[in-house]
Image (cartoon, rainbow, N blue to C red):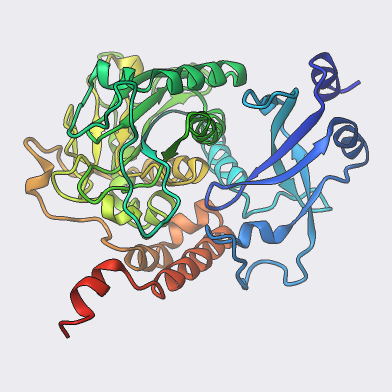
Length: 446
């Protein structure tokens, strides 16, 4: 009897949700009765079309030059390490994240989990192991049935909505205690290793930090956490959104990634020497981030809305200077002991696919390390006083990625091609939308 079989039978599971993260981080897949799921495992008949990875965030399919035009089936292989209960259902239901392979057993290069695994394997070939810890920001907002209307903060326990910034406010978080009690309960049931909860600068904006661990585990947990928060909020008649910039007048939401690299054999942090000094590999990792993150923006700022967040003086970076204990810099080095030496990548948005964010951030650092690149000098003072040095719009970012052959080689050239095709299709569709601003200011004035 397999590990999956034993786990499901012991918990009297009636249904299994087989999840596959697509390029946008949307959970695709199938829901099966447990008996059918186990039968599918026995005869390897659990399948989906390859085209799930050529879907845009709106659910539309694109024609791609790198996917098979016949839309062949791909095989789903559940990862037993991701098997958990779905705590918001009454009937005993399980969920499991799946890897995707072709009939010959070759991994599907477009699957975000495979993109991340490819980067992890490159580290392993050098005797390195990456350690990451995400920080995810999100907003709670009142239910918004008509998308033409702006979002509004939700009503808390006091019967009132927040009217101003309540950064780190304990009572402000307590306004939504019933939601967060469910969030923590759901996280415990799924064994999601969340750490601290804080109130961020925006109205009803919060942040959850994760404890550090290996990249795949952290990506899986961030992927499941997004779903968990949305479900907990809905139970209380509230939306939880991970949009990068849901409010025009409020700070955006980020997915900061703390990352370090250890020696596989010794477990020693390669970013610090025995005396606590920065190593050449640490500086090279930072240099790789500085050089290649602009080209990686379609992975870490993947939507048209993502670029609205990257605004001067709005708690988001505008360039890739690095500094110690400086939250205005795109790359921050927190104060720590030698064993915890790390760099915090503050550029990614909360709207990004966690697998692709972590893969992109680690890929940039990897290229820096293998080439021993040199970073700029660390800055002092506010990075907001420096030049804006990130792509301002999605087309700019796509053009930078198109020319980044070294990054494409690390991430997988077929994946990068498909990503650019999907994101270009999304931008083309966005360009067809006439905004309220245009109707207000141009309708009768031009």
